[in-house]
Length: 251
Image (cartoon, rainbow, N blue to C red; front, side, top):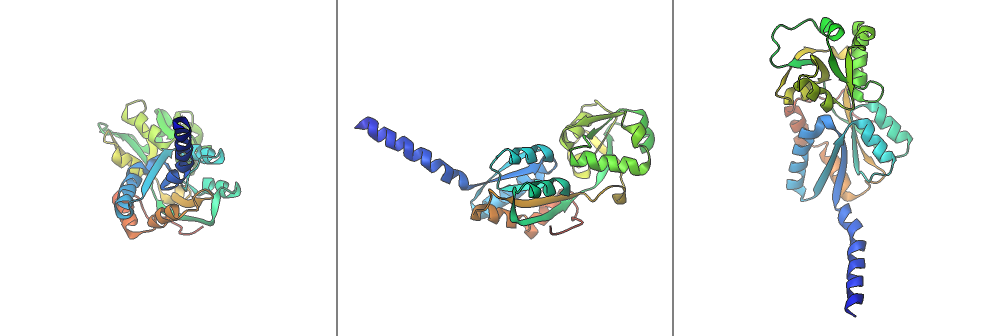
């Protein structure tokens, strides 16, 4: 009898696990937003008593995970390309997406550098880091900016490519390269680097972060966090972290 009771107890606990998991909102987000979203999550949890779990990585990595069946409720991308791809794969809910924030693209150098070379000279004669342009949003923006300046064909042979923007800025911080093309917010939070040059906004596509509920995230808890992303409190946190207003708003 005792073994039977233990068996029923185990079965009951297993059956309750999905329900408990649904009490938590799982958010997939780009690594460049980690600090600010951690702050957003803390404020949201304090106000609602609902738990939020963040998973940070490169946008393309997270998109592939979602495609493979990872149970994310909210998905945030670092560009519109990957959001459109997710919509085409029927992985985003019917509500579409909204532009959460914007950013600037900068050329950063190590904080101890004093005799700065011109950006074009630095990018064509020294080793520099940038994200992979074929798949990573920040890398795509960087390539566009270098093409606009007419130096891409020479610069690409000096580039060290990474899987996401955080890897890129850390390479610079460790002294592995002379410069790095990253988002302004990533340069600002890394104490070992400083911004040398801000690329003109018309030199690349607008840097907008997009947020959407996934087909998996059709729960009151997920929708509550999703709506909180549009809250003035959240907008203030993004502004304080150095993010700009998005160039677009809906879909």
